[in-house]
Image (cartoon, rainbow, N blue to C red; front, side):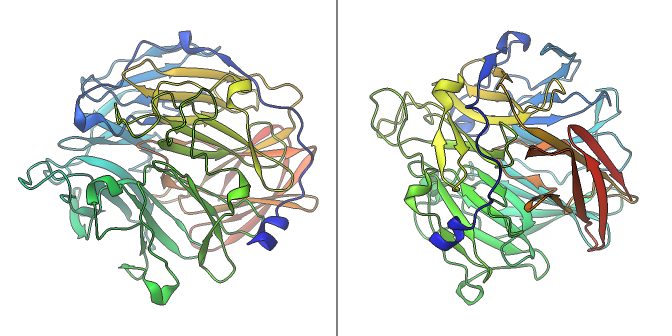
Amino acid sequence: MIRILAALLAASPAIADPLFKDRSDGLPEHIYDGGWEHFVGGGIAVFDCNGDDLPDLFAAGGANPAKLMVNEGDFRFNAAPLDDITGVTGAYPLDINGDGAMDLFVMRVGQNQLMMGDGTCGFAEGSFLPPSDDWTTAFSAWWDADDILTMAVGNYVDRADPEGPFGACDDNYILRQGQGDYFATPLTPGFCPLSILAANDARGRPTLRISNDRHYYVRGGYEQMWDITDQRFLGEEDGWQNISLWGMGIASRDLTGDGRDEVMLTSMGDQLMQIAGADGTYAPAPFTIGTYAQRPHTGDDGRPSTGWHAEFADIDNDGRADLFIAKGNVDQMPGLAINDPNNLLMQNSDGTFRETAATAGVATKERSRGAALADFDSDGRLDLVVMNRRARMELYRNVTPDTGDWLAVALGQPGHNVNAIGATVVVENGDQSQSQQVTVGGGHAGGKALPLHFGLGAASEVLVNVTWPDGIITTHQGPANETLRIDR
């Protein structure tokens, strides 16, 4: 494992510590609130709903109505017309019908909804979903080899179980498109997932990673991996080692340049980084990597932290992926930190991480839940939006000085899977190689549908290799500091 970390990318040295400016006053007032059914959730979907290349927001509201916020530029977001939808725990953007306009899978306490976008930030209810009164808290999606949309839906506690809530995790299921509607296949056992991600695993195979909340499955449960091709859970014979944690969120990114994604799992207490090995298995990162973030990094509250949304992204464009973790007590759990600031962990040249949230200005101590890193003003620097429970949303502009060069890559292809979900993009800059997968899922209760962002350090032009979902590889040249749009 030390050998793996020693082989981390020799990217350009750190350029500057990150710095953010609070622009929360540019958001419409919105609060994620509600009783125990909204202790979890609180996700944000980030996507372009009107084709102006500025990321817009769909924010879960819990007991309050969800809100659509349209980016008008200069960090001003206006609330757009939207039917009142309550009970929303989160949402994920994806182009469900391949018409070029982003749609939303909206997770709810109760019947989930498909909201179909019209390309002008208008939405209408989409195809029929199987009737359900489940408490949905996790989602992922992919297109299979026959170009058919498949969705994994993760459900939390079965509220109808009289023996609950502890040990009463509901069933998860797989949704597939039929003749206009969808049909569900159970994915059991379910251990109360709070995040699901369909991505290529360390073996290079498409797999569902399911992160489960030990608080409610209590015993007999663990983190799960489900092979999408074989349609089975992995076990010891596959090299999969069961671990049990209070799973909240998933982040996935290749940190070593070997083409295999490392995985970050947030939890109560330790935040677990797993290093992907050449043998297709995962090993816990050494504690010295600096990502376990098990206690608040400011103040005198020494109780364990509670991690929620996690996301890898290059904040200073130095060619090394950094890590943001949203933190916050579930509500008033006395054994866990109440004043629990978010983490902004910057990756050093040796592959370790250092904490910078306080000096960067993003160490909020609200009960944070969902979040996203996105370039809201098209200046090539990733900004930050954070959802809080029982407190207003926060928006921060990245004003880090002297950042490096960057590239954004947007993919398009014929067929139903127009955004090439399942593709892998490799950007080569000299002896440096970075890869990202195009996925739907992960995080905590929300995700992005935006061009992939790569920090480059110092570069004028890069080589871009795309492995499309069908395995075909194409090669492209791209100038730095632009969005490269690649269409098959």
